[in-house]
Image 1 (tube, rainbow, N blue to C red):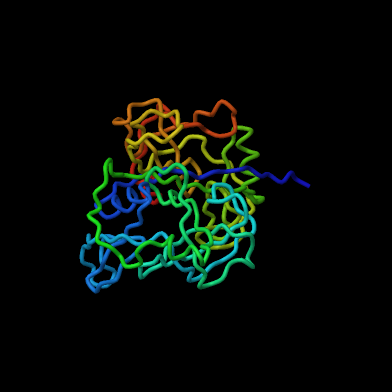
Image 2 (image 1 turned 90 degrees about the vertical axis):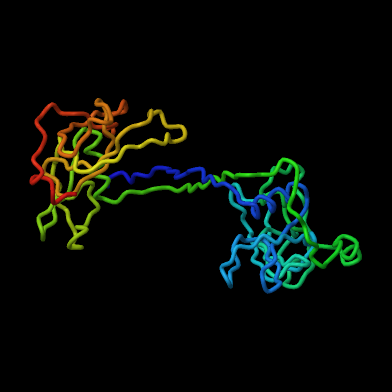
Amino acid sequence: MPEILTAPLTVAFPFTRSLGPVQSAFLTGLRERTVLGVRTSDGRVLVPPVEYDPVTAEEIRDLAEVAPTGTVTTWSWNPAPRPRQPLRTPFAWVLVRLDGADTALLHVLDAPGPHAVRTGMRVRIRWAPERTGAVTDIGCFEPCDPHEDDAAAGPRTPAPHDGVFADPVTGIVTPARLDYTYTPGRAQSRHLAALAERRITGERCPSCRKVHVPPRGACPTCGVAATEQVDVGPRGTVTTYCVVNIKAKDAGIEVPYVYAHIALDGADLALHGRIGGIPYDQVRMGLRVEPVWGADGRHPDHYRPAGEPDAAYDTYKELL
């Protein structure tokens, strides 16, 4: 029985955005332990605030301060927190309508168990010890003692606020990350085994007879199972390409560089690959290239010019 291959994979990127006056005031306010909403043309106060009225689509900037206490409108218990979630112990995801607001804020509630959570319960903000101007400045919500509720809440009528703070937050970086374990099927396992031998393989469809690289076990055009393995390349032709000018985090590739679709000889589907060994502004459609294998010998690190005349357009136009 062949070895079952698995590999841990991570897809991650930092999402960076600048903040307008409304979001800047909201996040800076959290840093200062102040919760701001925005008032719409019909008088509703939205928390968290938005920049455009969801009913009229008009720009709105009328800020209002609401209380740090509120009411749970709905909830769901999380018995097994995952890494990077707000709390390490079991908690409840809650929608909380803060006093003075007309909409609910999604956050977490620190409670001893689902028996201690109910719709309609009173809660208050527990501020994070260190605040930077992010929604995580609200460390969590906690149940509010009914005897302390009125004293803790402060004014429950939203109060106008100019949104002016010292050293306002003007931008945020949100890391997006997905960790998962990948298990290839039979087709890709055979393909990976061939790559370890510095061979590139595809699969031929028994119906249309096209060869697809990398193989998936079925023809993407006909939808029928494909089992015939075919060696392709290793040389190929650049069909289309783009110049990358933004350096990826932790990547050792200097910009600008070229990422291209490459139609390997004998294949009927172009694959992706980086082009090296040539100035980025000399890469062109029809350029003949060959693989340069990585140090581990398990896959091509990039493709370089093969020293052959450019391919005629008619030989690869169907693969654009």
